Structures are given as C-alpha cells and as structure tokens.
Length: 635
Ligand code: PRX
Image (cartoon, rainbow, N blue to C red; front, side, top):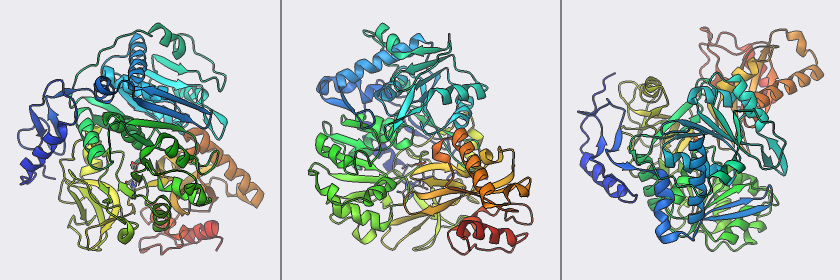
C-alpha cells in the first residue's frame, strides 16, 4: 500500500480552524506548526502530530487556570447513592487534592512518562489520581472496575505500571464489591509487577496489605497536606493516557492519546457540541473506566470551567427518578448518558420524569450504542429538550457524528446518529473495493487521515498494529476504519448499523468476543467455543456462547447442562468480570465452520436473531447451525 496522500486542498482552512480552537486552551509555549502530516513530517502517514512544539498541560487547563476566576465555584460534585454521600470540591479544593495526590505519587517514585494504572470505583480520588498523573506527566491507564483479574493482568502486562491506585471496594446496589482481592490476583497473574499499590480504604471491605508494596492513601495524604507540585509542561505530542479497548483479538488495544490535541479537541467539542459554559453544571452518568468518563466526566467539563458530577450509583436506585432528581438538585445544564440507561428508565413510570424541575436542562446527549427510535421518542417527549445522539469511539475520544440541535431536531431522523462533526472527513466505502457508497447504500464508516486532534496517536507500544488494524483494511487506500457499518440518507444523515468485527456492545460497553471465548475455553471440559453478540431489548446486545465439550456425555441431561453452564459463566465472571459474563452458554456437538475451518460467527449471530444466516456456500456442514438454532431458540 502506498503511503502517499493526495494533497488536501482544504489543508489551510483546516489548519486555520484548529489554530482558532487551540486558542481555547492555555499554552505555556506556543506551537510552531498546527499539524505535521505527510511530506516532510517526522513520521509517515497515517501518523499525525498536532500543535507541534507547543507545551501545555491537561491538569493546568482543567484545574489551575480556573483558580483565578472560579476558585470557589464547585468543580467536582461526588454524588453516591451507594454510600449516601454528597461531597463538593471547589476548584481551589480540587487543586489542593490533586497536588496532594501528585506529591504522594511522586514520593512513591512516579516520574514523567511512567504509567500509573487506576483501578477504582467512582470516587473523587479517581479524578484526583487522573489529574495528578496529568499534572506530573505520568501516563494514566484507567481500568474499568467491572473487569476482573485476568482482564486486569493483561492490562498490567501491557502498560507495565510503576504504580497501581486502587481501593478496598466499590459498591453496587448497596453491596460492597471487593476490588483488592481481584487486584492481588491480577498482580499475581501478571509478569510485570508494580513497585507500589496505593490504596484508598473506604471502609467497605477488609483489605490485606502486602508489606513494602502496598501503601495507604490516607496517611500518605496527611504527609503531603501542604505540598506544592508545579505542573510539568509537556510537548503537545507527549502521551497523556492509555485506555484499553477491545478489538478482534484477545489482546486489548492500548489507545494512546496526546496532550495538546486532546485538550484542544475537548475544549472545541465542549464549546461547539456540548453547550459547555463555565459556571454551569454537567452530569455524565458514564464511568471513568470508559472513554466517555475520560472525555466528558473529567477533562472536558473541567477544561470548560464547568461543575462536573461524579455519580456512584445506578439509574434505578433509590428509584428511576434519580437522574432527574440530580438534574433538579444541581441545576444541571448538560447531561450525557447511554441508550441502555434510558431504556431501563423507560420500563418505569414516565411520571418520574415529570416529578422534577428539569428547566435547567439544555440537552441530553446519548452515545455508545444505537439509540432506537422508540427510546429516542420517549425521552425527547418526556424531557422536552433536545436529545442528541452522538457516535464515536474510544479511539477518537470525542464525537465523529452528532445530531444537530434544532427545534424537533430528531423527529424526521430518529435512529440517526447525525451528521459529521467538524474536523472529521467521514466517508462510507465498500469494504471490499474501497469505492465510496451512494445514498442509502450500506458501507463501512471510515475517516480520511489525518485524524483530527484528540484521536488516538497509536496503539501503546505497537505502531505496526495501529497502522495494520485501523488503516490497512480498506483495499487501495490508507484510511481509518471504524469497523462500523453505516448508511447515509438523502439528507446526509448517517445511521450506524453495527460492527463488522468481533466487537459486541453490551449496555453500551464495548467487549471483544475473543476475550470471552478464551475465558470459556480455559474451562477444562471445553474443547472449543464461539461467542456472538445477540440483540437484547434492554442492553442492545448480550454475549451468547456456544461451546463444544471434550466429552459430550458430560451434558447428557438438562441438569448436567445447567450445572456446567453455571460453572462456565462463573469462570468468565471470575476471570474477566461481571460485565463479560455471557447471558447463555449452550453446548453443541460442533461449531458451524467453513471448509477451511473458520468459525461462522456472523451466521451464528444471524440464526440467534432469527435472521437469514447469509451465504453458506463455504459451510462445511450445515447441521451445527441447526444445533445453534435448536439450542438458542428451541426451534
Ligand atoms: O459500534 C459503535 C458504537 O460503539 C462503538 C465504540 O464504542 P467505545 O469504543 O466504547 O466508545 C464509545 C464512545 C461513545 C462504535 O464503534 N457506538 C458508539 N456510539 C454510537 C454507537 N453506535 C450507534 N450509535 C451511536 N451513537
């Protein structure tokens, strides 16, 4: 494949636009060029470098620079319906806590460029830890609390953190969920060992400490109450963080982001997409373990000088009105959630929506999975404010598509993820030929490089995988594939039709089926298996496994099958976490495969969803597909 890119006629307009957006953040030293890409660049396409030579800092832009005008304004409000606590930190208080955390981390040997893995529930210390890393130029890697030891171990081995920050436990629906034993097991499994583990003791579960390695945060904080840790000025293209995401293989990809480009993209998106307004309140119900949490709980709202709400709890406790109660209580201007959360609320009384004063709410943003029309309609009507679908990925860090906000914005286009966002050259192409698709023709959603600021720079430690995975799948061109199928209507509205790879989306959480398959196959009784995502009315998709036993007699009767299914599901739960636990694991005699031995996952999925299994001319034997149908649909 040629790395030569056609000269972009819009180059100067693009650079001018980003130069203007760049003025939304503080720079210590100005950049010498907006973009380095193509001819004469230090790196060949598709690698891009934004705001080259400029020095800045994410923590400075999110915290320090607001101290002048808004020191006493709330920056972070922690709302926990799990432990019934509300705690508010002004910008001045947030600054103090972040500096203490930075000092504590430094005392444990953390330096610029070191990785710090953060495995924490939704508590303020998670935000302090992220910002403290940003402050001292350490690279954070936040791992979602719903992942268990094996998932965690893979991420430890890949990121090789000097420090891990964790806690005794999280809490879900009032019950403690222990983190520390999972972390200890993960460190045991991992080859790379952190020098220290910094522990937040919430008093939710007993913790054992490993002498010399484990350090408690509370006493360390006491030692650094009056610390002063200046920000490290970083070149725009230094690394801010790694965030792992699932792909086609069992090895998670460390999405690596820069500093300056990310700060600018977030500042621009807050201003032009999310109604960011300093002094107002922003509430995203996501989790800091996901990209939405990084961009739109922590960095985006704080860069915009807003008050951000960190919510520990579910959408349904104490009742399905809790989101709206918080909107009323904090006069929330902008809210961000997921279609699954709204579908869960939809099962409850719509009166709960009417019970609260929601007049402060400017818009509700929903992302992470397709927003179905009935849900979009229900929530739009219920809230009486725009509901804005936006489509993006861990890799991009901020929206690629978003529905425009105009009166009755979604009504003619319910189900659409909207129009391309500024900075993105989005194209629909044929997966086999690379030819651009026309109106109402299904194609792959691609982005012409250079990717805009804020998108991934590379895969941590694996430039080759970055290029091969994302840019070399469409024949004849170097273009970024989202791995999503889409279609565009005559008005230019885009519809996302689902993934073309083995990534599934459970309740807005992105999971790789290969990781789940590896876990199922680690059960001694299993010979091989396939996991597919099957449509679900609430969660969008659920994982369903089909396993072949080494000894088929183990599943002779219903009781034996059920016991084995329970065992396999617990194994996945224990290794990967509750989030990856399949909804069902069926035992069948053989997997449907092509004659060359490739498992026909797409056909399995189609059969489970009562759809046409597609072209079966290469199938080796059709009977396993009948078994899939029989097992899953009982037909
Ligand atoms: O398949 C698309 C789906 O979620 C994937 C990205 O997931 P993740 O990396 O977790 O990032 C989520 C950031 C919001 C996409 O490849 N997806 C995301 N948003 C939408 C969506 N599918 C349909 N509509 C959306 N608005």
